[in-house]
Image (spheres, rainbow, N blue to C red):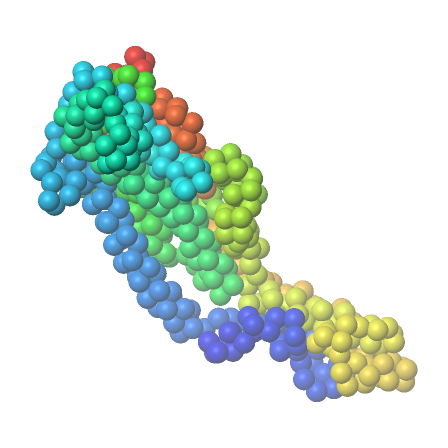
Length: 479
């Protein structure tokens, strides 16, 4: 038996409300109805219409995501180019010296500097990875500004202001070099965290639809997953590069590290872009195949990491609802029933409730067996007649196309995908990269430059970038 697309939508929206029940007298063709319920077949034209609508929606999302990622990449490369002394931080300004040279010159002048969080009016950090350059001279100038304006500054205070003026432009350049990298770090890490969960949700929705409509996962489906994972790798490269650069600023300025590390990371990153990130069909199938594994475990890890980075109160307020909703989608995808299974469940409920009617037992008013038919079943039973549905119904095979498709995806997950998914075996592939991103943010917030660099090295997917970050780490920490 085939259903139109509109009928399918109606069934999905009305599961449990009697839309699939047999009509007429109690007991009329009940066995046949139950057999037919489990034998519903989604027509090919309806499946094609679903795929077409889904593709149109995904194409729009892909286009928007590509544009967003291109902007992130452009901003990150601009920030690194400014740090390397190859670009202006503002159109009206001159191209600054490389950040490494600015650090050396300001150190030689005895200017005390530090990397510190950007704070709000209450003195609290705006974001854990939003950092800025602070220096003693500028802070002192701010405190003396009123005395100078009122002519009350001492000779020594006036001299300190004059000395500051000699270095003010280099301080401004270095301040903006740090700020540009900090902004790029915050935006790109936010993107990695959110987009990885969005990718998971998108694949979960795809799996749910295929199972419900008895549709096999096709090569086009896996191509869609592959495109998403390729974008994810590109985002990871951007985030790792900017995080590594910001961590290097911390190590150089707060830890008196070698300024050459700034040049190494900036140059390695600029040479590596534009990236060509590739994901194979096997890797895409492995991603789909791993979707159902340890959903609650992965959620627990995400939640624990976010609580660690942001604190319980902030997590509860800003993140919990979204995280719960996303993982609920993934969990439901694995238990989604086909149209035939839903119809059979509805028929089983109808049959059980009609048997209750025949025995004179109360049933839920919302049951598909409620109404005049329930009363008729009781009257028939009292007359010694069959109430319909009281006897056993023949077993019916449940359509298994969706389960077969997931089985293929699960088998693919047994292949060698260690290099593609950054070591996150038997879990959502993005889990490893998000973990590194969050750990890096946590390290930055604590001033742990070594930990932040280690995290960046852990999830950067491009060998050239990884080598540059590793070399800078050795230079700074002698490891």
